[in-house]
Length: 248
Image 1: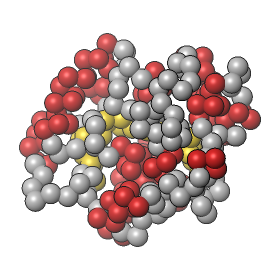
Image 2: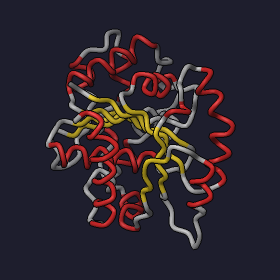
Image 3: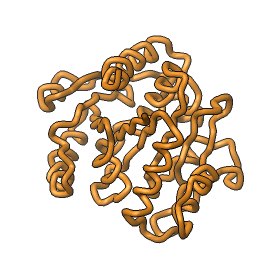
Image 4: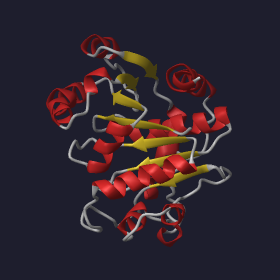
């Protein structure tokens, strides 16, 4: 039975990197099929994840969802696979695409997408946008088996959720009960982790800053396993305790 995990959070909280690294550890630990989905059309994920591939060598989720009928074949044709990871697929948007490139998504197309990927993969990780009006993200949060709220140790993250949580709640998403992960995507002389922990309840894990992960993001190597053993140990522990244990 497939499981869907939806990752959402404040701007610059490191959602894409965190979602990808979590998906990689699930893939490695379970020896299973994983599909990563990015819903972002404002900053398309594929040129970030696969910067060394020509745009013509990448396949867009938008083109698949634009089809009159969303089928398994149309979704399979949109999957991008990282080098050496045959059962790890990425769905997202290409460079040059934006919110006006394709017709607005409808609920039936998104339901078809989720139904198909659940049949194709053991685990689906949806990298949601920080926009409560993004239909794909809202429906992913609503149908996810495990929604994860990502926060970063800064005032921007606290201000974002103070403003946006009422909007999620108005859309029927019970964000107040979601597990929270504290992520530190950037290094600084001081990050107010303890102050943030006091502000938010239900923090289940803290993911530390990793210079090697940051370099991967800057160099376009995020889909590859990182060589930071300390970071990977923490991420594996998180995946085992807070993700995989939910279904064992």
